[in-house]
Image (cartoon, rainbow, N blue to C red; front, side):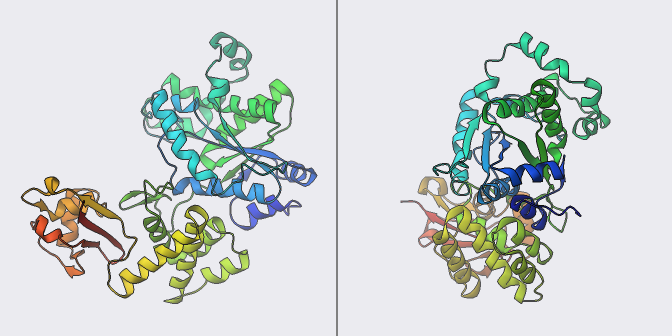
Length: 418
């Protein structure tokens, strides 16, 4: 990236590694230098929580506000009914209004940890829902006024659509409309709130460009698009996934300890990059920590885990997670903050298999995966190697909490409830 920005926001985006592409570097930079820029990112409500894969976008909105500009978080109450087909092999399952509204309520909880919606300043964040303008659209008027601005030939050329068609996978007319609706979101946000910028992952480039073109055609307004890189870890895995599933941001779906542990388990090669993206430590410090080697890099990973967990869950949760980790790893103890599986006596009955406990506690994704842990000598019960996958656990054996371990880094407790 050779562009030298004038504005604080663009400097942060470039210096910390947030920027993949921009429709007009100089034009956007000058807009930021002139005054408060309202900018938005859309979040469809496909689950009750966002996961770590969305955290790069949330941090972009946080930096936007920290540098004096106005973040708009747009909930996809309308677009979730259609489903974004971008780079997907199949159609998303359709959700009803109740499920979408429940998901939005869950997703919204995270944002206030990062963004200020209550400030009296002129860069107060806005939380909006595109159902407000999409729900009551008149289909014929929409086709005539908006649809006429879209070229099907051009829409088919976007990589997100092309890749699906090239694999001869069905793309429904419903999904094909998604990019038109997202473009219309940008138009409406510009018309209603003066929004000048849409941000998103690089898989959203086509959708963002469509919104810019539509707004120019209908309102003759100059607006911009900026994308972040689609992150994968250094070993090629998609960011936000782990062996036990998605790394959710809501504490009721993933405990703060498990969230902390995810960051503590960052590979050496990713540590410096993640410090720049997911913390607010100075860039020089991020680079210094990321360059550490051997056992010293572990200290950098603990700093990463503490900083990221503090932003989302608070300093107390981060401190408790670190204390639990030290108790578990350094002293072989139970720890106060480990994920816990509570069982009733009825659930245990005459006995429950150890394999089932590993699955139900989240330490294995399936019975097959759990059995592999045992055969590979990766399973421990109360810190002792356990090779018998056929072991049955009775209620008497759970008179005190039982600690299960998958490898050296993943642990859970099992106990009788009540």
